[in-house]
Image (cartoon, rainbow, N blue to C red; front, side, top):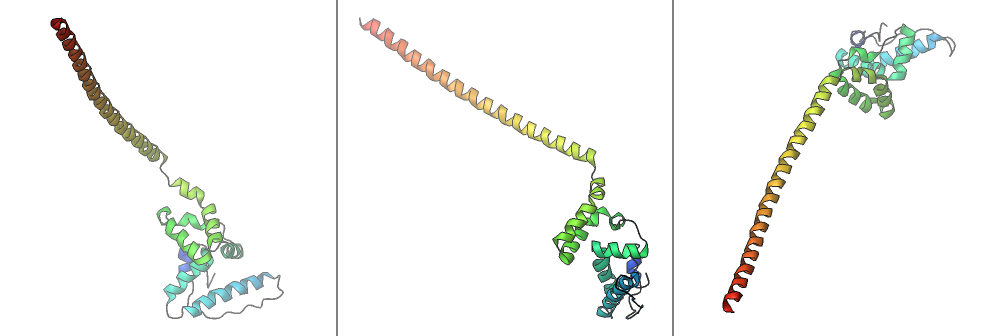
Amino acid sequence: KLVNDVSSIKATLQSNHTLEYIYINPGEPSDPNQKIQTNIKMATNINVKNLYSTEAAGREKVIQTQLHSETRAELCQLQDVDHSLFNEIDPLHLPEVFALIGRSHGHGELYDALSSSMMILFSTVNVKKCIQQERDHHLAEATEYAAKVAEHRAKAEQLDAKLAAMEEAVEGNERDQDNEQRSNK
C-alpha cells in the first residue's frame, strides 16, 4: 500500500510517488512475495518515469492499476480490498472514464469495465422521466399527424367542391343544349 494503495482512487493518488526502489525477497515464483515485488516494481517504475511530477505519477498509477481489471484484482487480493472501483466514480464521469480505459487498455478492458458497471449506469437512469419523455414525443407526433390529416381533409373538400362545380357546369351545359335543341324544333 505504500507505493500504490488501491483501496480507493483517492488513496492511489495519495500513495508515495517519489520512492524509486524497494526490494522484498521474492522467494519462490509461487510465493505471494513475488507478486508483491512485481507490483512494487511496477509502481516504482511509474514513479521513476514521472520523477518530476508526483501528480502525473498518481494519474498513471490510477490508469495502470485501478482502471485495468486484472491488475486491480491482483492488487485488491494482495491488499484485502473488496469493493468496486466504479462505485466511487460519479456516474456522469463514467463516459470519460470508459473512454480513458479504451484508449489506455483496449476494447477488451473497456468491455470488462462496461460489464462490471452496468448496474451503476442503470441506477442513474430516471425511468419515470424517460417514460414521460417518450409519452410527450408520441403526443407531439399525434398532434403533428392530426394537423396533417386536417390539412389533407381540407384539401380534399376543396377538390370535391371543384369537382361538384365542374359537374354542375357540365349538367348546366347539357340542359342549355337540350333547351336550345327544343327551341330549334
